[in-house]
Structure formats: C-alpha cells, structure tokens
Length: 457
Image (cartoon, rainbow, N blue to C red; front, side, top):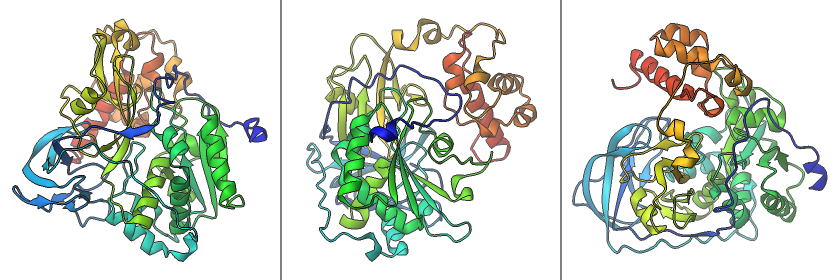
C-alpha cells in the first residue's frame, strides 16, 4: 500500500474545501431512531416513478413491495417496517419539491437492528448467472446510493454493445463532512467486496478498481486486506487518489483512476466502464446473497450545529426532523439544514422531508460555515477574475452560462454547454463576488427541461 500511496492520482482543477470529517469519521454505524410514521417517496431515482401497489388501510410487512413500475429504467420501493398504510399523498421531496408518497404507520416503532451479513464460506460469484444477479438487484429496488440514483440493475446488466471492460468502485466520498461510505468500507468490508464481485460478474468486467481518497488510509488498508484474504488480487485493485473535490464525480473518478475520458454528453458505459458506489456494492451483496430489499441505509448526520453527530442506520422514509431530534437536536448556531453535503446538497425548509435511497447525509450548518455574505445573499458584480474557470472540472465557463441564464438566453447557455455542468458547486465556492453560479446553471437546466416538456412547469 505504501508504494501505491506514492502514486496518488487525480483529475485536473477542482477545489480543496475544509474536509470537516472529524465530527463523524470515528463514529461507528449505529441504529437510528425508532419512528412511528415513515413516508416512502415513489420517485427516488433517475427514471420513471413507481406506482403505488397498496392502498390506504392495507397492512404491510417489512420488505413487502409497495411501489412498482414496469419501465426499463425504474426500481421498486418496499416497506421498511411492518405497519398500516395511513395515506397516499404528496410529501416533500429534496429534489422535486413534492411527490407522491406512501405513508406507513409502524406496527411497533422500534430502533432498527443493524443488518447481519454472513458470507458463505464457499462464495464464488461464478456460480451466479449475470441475469440472475441483475434480476435480484432489480427486485430489491437498488439504485446508486452515492447521489445520482440510477437503477443499478440497468447499470450492471451484461451488454455486448459496447462491452464493459472495467468496473470502477467509488469510495472517494469527496464531499466535506460525510463519512457514511467511509464507515461502510471499514465495518462492512467483506460485504462490499462480495457485492463488487457480483457486480463484476453481472457486467462482465475483467478489471476492477476501487478508488479511495488518501485521507482515508484505514479504508484503503481495510479494502486491500479484504482483497488479499479473498485471493482477488489479480483482477481487483485499490487505487489511492489525491484528496480533492469533486474526486467522487463519476467523470472525474474515471479520469483519475484509469486515465480515460468520458465524452461530453456521454455516459461511462460508452467507453466500457461501469461505476458503482461502495454502499451500492454492499446492497448488491445483501440483495443477491440474502434476498434483502433496499429498505434502510446509513446516513451521516453532521455539521457544527448538530448536538450529537454520527453515522446511523435508518429506514428509508424516516423524516429528517426525527433523525435530527434523535441526534440531540440542533444548537442555537444552526442556520441551514442540507440534505447531503455542503457542496452539492440541497437546503430543505420542511424538516418532514423523508430520507431517500440516495440520501447519505443530513448536514446542519452554522452561519459561520456558510459565510455571512452568502447567508445574507449579498452578491456583488462579477469582477471577471476567472477563478470559476480555473476550478471547473469540466472546463466550462460558468460565468458566461450564468449570465446567459440571467438574461433568459438559453440558446446562448446551451452554446456554452450548460448540459455538461455536473453541478459540483466549485465555481460558487470560489466566487469572490458570492454569485451563486451553480444555482443559475441549475435554474437554466430546469427552464430548458420545461421547454422540452421533460419537467412540469
């Protein structure tokens, strides 16, 4: 490992925000709160939303499928706990604003139990057919748990055109504060590796790289040791990467770890690469080896304004307010609650917003952390310093795109490749004028989607 650390790789540009992982990196995963009422959103991924498979008053069991869809790009949702369907109604959604949800009254509210995982002593991924793995993953409702939420069965399915030669596993967790993936790599190491081997078997990749930033040496050691124990050193390798944001961005990770570039507007499978997150890998193992649907996930609750930060195993659908209350509530310094990390997370005003399959963190920020000027939304005119150009990992000109959106010149924004923006927030982070460049770009994308009738007005 020492030799590998000398060969740390990265991508060009990006930023180095304070890591602030000390609040939770040494906090082992523990059960979250017992909640009496959970709301399972019917849209939790990229693709078609689910349709409710239950109605008000129905009794449901833990793990029962309660929302399904026959579309190719979709993943079903399941009941995390046994109980009774209280209602089907609109609920707050961290991205969409509101969407349909199934609210379940738990039969016996109790803290969740940490899942057990027993790797069969004769585990051999070659015994599983690729189609069987994909079917189990789809039935379990797995989506990418690192943020984007693409249905995993679609991502790992075998496809001869083009063949997938490399499986790249994302263990970077480059967002400040968040440590849920780090703890999963330390505590669920064998489960993560088993899921990686099953995903490799499904997609047919001949090589596997696990990208981990070098601020997580214990995770690098743990995953390397697991690979050695399993005798997988010939085709699975840990790749230490420089700590830099957004190292965990799919396109940046591919470039840093294996030196390939995804064309603008393209996706990784077009160059033969499949990318999955370490939490997703662990969930694949649970789905295939233990027939376990995705009903719970590990969530980092953190920030300078949270009383008891930590990493908690919670049912999907848990209200954010219940999780914050379980962590001792917020301090007087709290100024903003964010679903996710401070760079790409979304501020929420309604704390009844439920945890989703992609929700890896709840970050409670203070005014000091946000910055007084940004907190008060005090912007000044662009001084044309060019800092946003220097840090954009996609080599875009964020200021020109933002100005085009402000002037409602969406065709101009498109000519500057607004669609290629990964919304990492680097430009807003370095802007000395406190202009929310990423916010303008996100708004421009929404306007364009509405023009093309891909989003409701």
